[in-house]
Length: 425
Image 1 (spheres, rainbow, N blue to C red):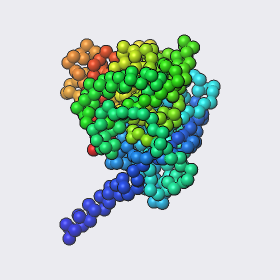
Image 2: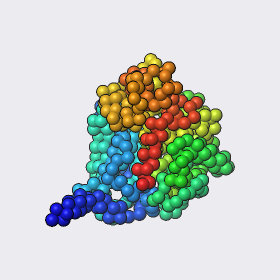
Image 3: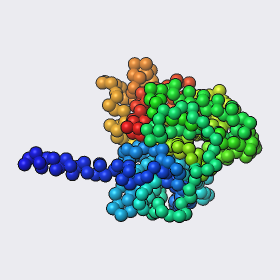
Image 4: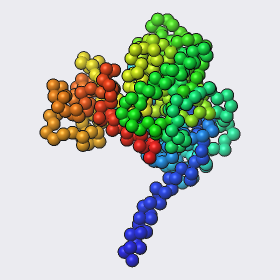
């Protein structure tokens, strides 16, 4: 009898896990949801812009109801009948960064945001939440999606942007699919773009753990043509007509290169399996940007192209924080020091056990003195995430701190490996 009871208990425990099979709730298509995030520093809101369907699903088919990382925002999809959570994902957004600027104190703006979800078989409720740096809710929207809705726009069946694979190691369901997009390359410059995309690919897989896990990635270069050559540089009064309207001087920071035209980015990729996006800008100007689960955008013809594209992909793919800091603490309010950041490579030591505490050697001095960095490749070095005090990084130097350092530190490597495993195992 005891054996029967134990077997029954195990069966009941495993039932919810078995209920999360991809084919139980989803078909092999993508539901693309375009949102508008609007507001200012004191009040924010979310609205649905458009729903689209794409012909295949390139995302994960396991760990469906788990979050890869906490992020600055989250999306939860529930079965509309039972209320069961059937999919979760997380993200960050340019809008949330803008809320911390002086401009957001006096102006109200709207930002495009686009997310890819597995296509449900039956009606679902989608809940999207924006969180502030203290993990408080900034805005939340719940909306119903009926997969049979005739106004869900079908995309990616025709007029697919020209593209070619730089590496293809398997079907989209078995690999992480990264699309590299051309920004500011005219039709006559596409061979240059393909060469630049190959350099970006080579640079990424020259870093661990990407190198040893290369077979878990597909990389496709997408030749989105531009009317003008180059990208916009506002401080030089240079404005270009490009597919994604990217520009430097985002938030008046000269090196910050971004785009807010995310619908155009995703339209260029419709019909091509993709999960993560790298945009290469045809310019010698130095700069870039990376936003978690949104995109990497970086200059392709500056001498630091190779380290910068890898650094920015560390942001957009793995949700890694910047590890550099300013001695005068000009940005100390970016990360509150009385809560633990969600990024895996920085810590306030409020919940250090969730970070790299298990990797520390015995009798390690904390904070770890810089003079002992040779003795302690993994430590607790003060200064990270723009703040010289109160926030810590795990190694003295890292690809997420400087362009000169040749690799990701051990903490970042473990974080990246865990995320690759999450998506593919």
